[in-house]
Length: 246
Image (cartoon, rainbow, N blue to C red; front, side, top):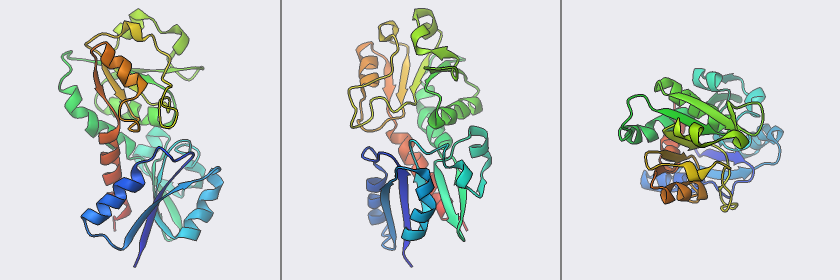
């Protein structure tokens, strides 16, 4: 019996998930599985999409990680704490939501944290959307104090207020916004990059392109950098595990 999976979001030109799962299916000889990208303009198209394509599981990306919540029958504890879902399992017509971003981000940064010399590092998170909430939860689990930056009231800081003292108070800076993601690869978060130091660790959740303007500017100041490709692999494998649970 064929099992169909996919990813929803808009737009979806940046997504590597279809290619990742295509290679996984070939490598593991899973000839009965398919995985496709479904760029939808409205989250309310999801239920019909699942029905039309007989989907057993769905990954959720920008801008629907929070908007999908009202359509779900149940969510796991992590998704409830985060308030965002990026993985859906379809069982007997019901949609069960999960958040694998927390797991993926946590696993991907553990090797990086081993390089941080400070005993109690602090993190600055750029953005306040669904991905940001997953990163916040990850840092909470790792007992790392953090703050968020936004254009409005949601964050602890405004981009316009960031200065040398603030940037030097944080060791890790994480971009959770889509700024710099393909095809808009020339953009980047508006932070005062001139105050970056070689002790800063810059992490971008974006994996396409592999080196965003945000990370490139970090390299210019001799920062340690990391993109989101490892996180993609970890969260994708966790999604696969969820979809195939009995």
